[in-house]
Image (cartoon, rainbow, N blue to C red; front, side):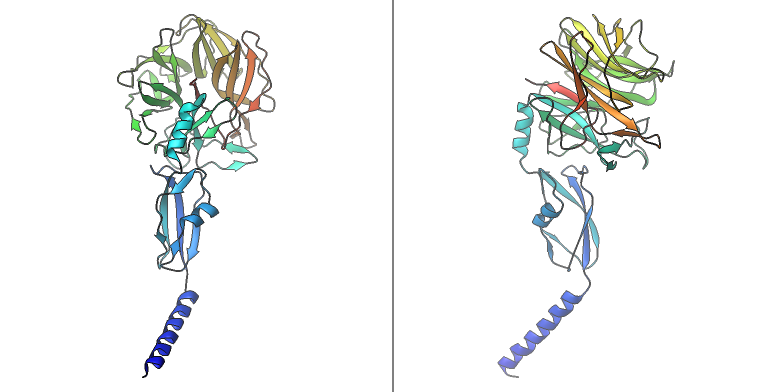
Length: 387
């Protein structure tokens, strides 16, 4: 066989092989989108198809399923002969800029995002179970999200890697170089927004197991930090607000819970938000009594009371009720953030994000509810004014 015929024969064989290859069966890669800590990103799994041994490019991943603010860690992903599923980790595109923007913002807040709850017509069903144990498939999963703003109305999300934990109703403070986040059933802290430390918290035997909700930081008139939390008493089986000290040196909740007092407190009260302002402790909470179910404010000279409460004249419009009260004080005004909800025909609560209303202190004349602006449905959040 001459050299020319040999090359012609080899070319025919190669072309035949390529034709067989390209006409053969394709394989699939199903991608599960997570951050560097393995925490789910709010992007649906997507399946890509191609021939074996070809490259699934990162540009394809970013164009077809954009993950705003993130970029894939792995650059070379090849299709195999068989179908496969992978968890693909994403990192912040500009981590340093994200942290700098967060630290410079006038307001920062910790919130959560239900990751398995679908959105219909702008409303999201709430997948929680009342015990907040997050066991089983029906409880869904809530992921921590940090947001920031310069006006308290327009918010941006911090695109970082979050702790792989179920976080609900969080409150944030910066104490001795750490960013602390306390939430229903847990306490974490970080110095750099990369590494998260979970701090042990032994829950008190004076409360019904698991029924402890929405803890928040507050500072007393001397500057010391405490935690206020709603919990179900083993004695009364009602929800009440309790206060514990917080050890700033160790970062632990001391668990010396004491009930707040007052002459006209309801039987059930949740979602306490407490601020020391101009010589008084101003407490916002939700009156959870079924017959009342109102947003409430109370005032005292001592953070344990006695408090005197009054129902807030907040027009909720088409909403059934609201929870997650969070107050900010400025220029003799109060801006009150709440998490309003509706109830569908199946009796399920539906949320479309945090709203706010304002009043001149002492007037009890609150403005019409307005929604905040954010890149996702922001739920019950804890806000911190930095500057």
